Image 1 (cartoon, rainbow, N blue to C red):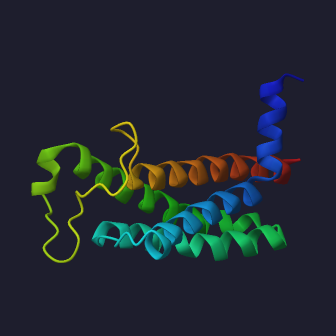
Image 2 (image 1 turned 90 degrees about the vertical axis):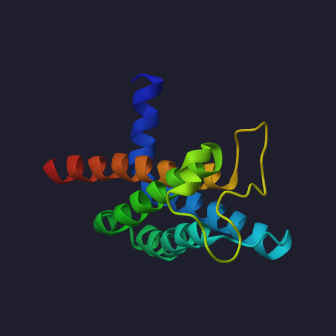
Amino acid sequence: MTGEGSLLRLIRQYALYLAWVVSLIATGGSLFMSEVLGYIPCKLCWLQRICMYPLVVLLGRASYLNDRKQIGYVLPLSIIGGCISLYHYAEQKIPGFAKLLPCTAGVPCNVDYLDWWGVVTIPLLALIAFVLITVILLIGRDGAREAEEE
C-alpha cells in the first residue's frame, strides 16, 4: 500500500482522537493568550470560542467511547467556527471588511495582537484549527461509513 493510503487509513482510524487533540491545542492556546498574555478577546473571538470550547468536551467524550455518531453533531460547530474565523481574518487583512459589521464596544475586531510575517494572526490560527478538525472528521466519517458497509 502507498504511503498516502496508509496515512488516510490512520487518520480514519484515529479521527476522533486527532480532532480532539487539535481542539485541545486550540483551546489551550486561546486560554494562554487571554489569561497569560493578557490579550482581551473581541466579539468575533468570543464567537469562535463558543464554537471551539465545546469541541474539547464533545470530541473527548466521543474519543473515549469511540462514538463516531458524534461527528454529525460536532461538524456544524467546526464549520460555523471556521466561517467566523474566515470573516474575522478578512476583517483584519482587508480594510473594507471592518466597515461591514464594525465592533461598537470593547476591543475592535480588526486589531492584530499577533501578526507574524504579516500573515499569521489569531483568527488565522483558529481557522487552521477549525479546518483541520473539519477535514479530519470528514475523513473519519467516511471511514465509519466504509466500516458499516463491510
